[in-house]
Length: 510
Image (cartoon, rainbow, N blue to C red; front, top):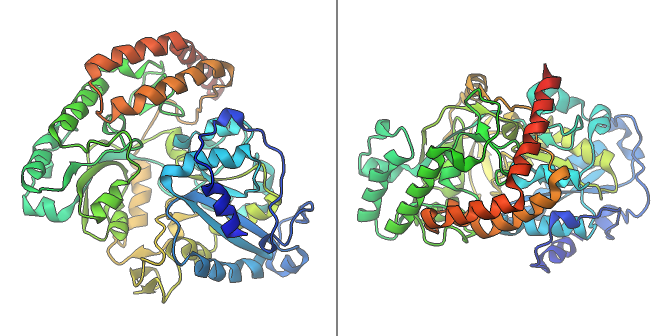
């Protein structure tokens, strides 16, 4: 069944828009689901382990962006020993390559394919999926089967993910703040003795990148791709949803008026700097189109640095994937936005045949340490070995290294790598506490009333946004064209609607 499911996903390269989503229940046959074509038999009350045999067998699919792993089946079998005993369920891990994630997610929804737990995030159009009916409201399920989730999550996560007062995703328990900086290969930082204390802005990185360009042939100094665009990362913008939707305010400021992002001079200057770097060879030429991640390029020895949202110990987390020492350079101050509280979630698809069981699995991912670490690190003695109760080191990560630890469950239950700071989780808490709260924290824009304008803007963004933000086109020539098209498509109407909703939000908040 699992191979059939993945083959269905692989069979289409067509881009299916979210607006075409029409969700009705459908079943996927096969023994892993126990032939689940009948209605769920899960009782309404929370199920305890002793009552698990009363439940019919059910397979919960877990879909998230990432590379399929060689030892995935063996990991599933280990996970299923726990799930079968506790809730008479099994799991079907379904990672989907990052480059194909959005298209295949849209295909899944439009074809009404059975799905259960699905990764979602504000930066992955979560709000649009919700308003198209792709995900179930989880509030009742959370009360019935999510007691451990409610115990573990900061109230800011539980409240911050809500849309129109309802919960459509359960946040990963991790940092609720972010800042921006650079992740770099430590060996090259040491080799050239870079003085990182002098770097206070994006522009200050240029001498470092020029040194790499001139001396390290075959190494891209600053790797950029369509989802990792430096000017956007350094912008300090809160867009209250999708970053491509017009209307932003400064998350570290106090102004509550949304403006077009191109009205901020610093943003435009960083776009021009990106273009300059692309022209000079600091940035890769295929930045607007490549699907290869910076981690893959660094692991292959073909890149030096990339921009990233940061948190305590991010460099050590990345080391586990790229297999070379990394160093992070924090440049901006930590802030908290709705996007941070909704930056990594698991939702339950409207096509799930047993939402109760899906929520039970989700609850266990927030409370069962053994289960969670199987999902994110694999099998002890095969993929890693324990150095102490909570510290591990790699053995055979080539067999299972999904890099999904920030996507799933309660990250505070994750084992620490041998290279990581023993005080990592304490530093997470301090990092969260130090963050500046955005004026729009808790607000998420609903574009349903301007969906026609949004559809036009989406099409225009496909032509211009990535090209401009990756430095692939001359901003002096292209930004005026882009802005003219946006205005004609209804940019100002969208911003006005966003402001109207935000003003109402502030009024009710008071």
